Image (cartoon, rainbow, N blue to C red; front, side, top):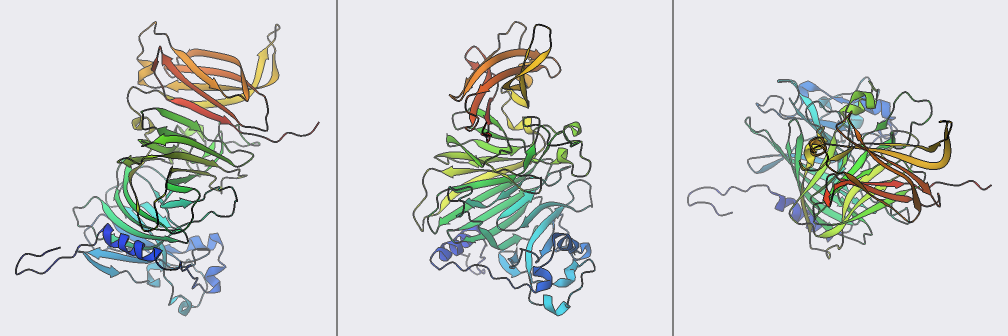
Length: 507
């Protein structure tokens, strides 16, 4: 940057600086992070790790007139290597050095000298999002390239990541978790209502530079710019990856004698394709690993959503799944041809994040040429606002054992599977009387439709589609699709469901 005559040059810190660092890394052999933890921290149980909390009176920028504050995560457990964290003030970089006095160790017994050479594992961003003058955590960056964000009245649920590599690949061994090894945070001015964060990512097969702009609000928004360099052979690259949990819901049935009707951080994958179609894929907790791919050119959006925030859907006062947000990825610019991929992994409990969704480009660039993907992430409880006004949506998917009514009105199970899909939205509620609404239904070759009934659902001013299907080979998945139309005009998104494969006992 050229300076005016008689003035000093001002050097700004930008994404280009981090990109240059990422480009340098691909020319060097990968250096894996090395643990510097003493045993008292490396062998720590999760409950003990949670005892280490940042001191509120020691928050970074605590004495500055800015609404944003930073608090740090201490190293411990598998967070065994420090990450470098710096602040950027007027274009100049200042390292934020590790200080154990910033933490309350919750009565843990250890030699203070053992922490002298430790560091930070990550950091939190705090902001008065719910009440003036009260600092609430709104963003967390901890572990690999994971980060979580919430808006007003929300609590943490699903996570985003910088990059995913070979998630659920065929060999089951090559998955890689790139790591943010260094952060730079611009010190905000008193009037600023956004926070700028830079990150340098590293892994054996990729490096990357990231710029995040965090904008808190009713819906908190994060604008992401990523510049990724491929370092080695990658089979499945995941851009803008999201990670969530789905244990069960009405589309799969309550497990055991559980008071909660549903237990999940997300209940479906939504996709807005480049040609304007809307898809809704309810999530499953399958018996076997499942990977689904949706071919899309220049996606307009995709995300893992938590549709339905009424408390009665979850009945959980402890974990408040009703307050967990959806994350919607809105690409900026053209991403070209590729796939939105959904990974569903079997899990026995809610402690495992078993759902992944990401964009996979059709082609990867040669070494040294960066992939550029810019996008916005919306963290929201208002999922209908993501759709276009003239599009109806799936309110819920109910699944049950199929049955037929006998002449004596007694219902008898017949080995089929039935679905009740409720569609709602202003476009359906506002249809003139006499409008002919039909259901377009498609069942793959592994299924047979035994019943297809569409009827008004006055309780939601929408429609209910009842499908009863027979699976020909339960060892293979069955794909179903359905949408409501008025003539040739689509009224709703397309419900795209996979009835997972299951094991069959020998007779």
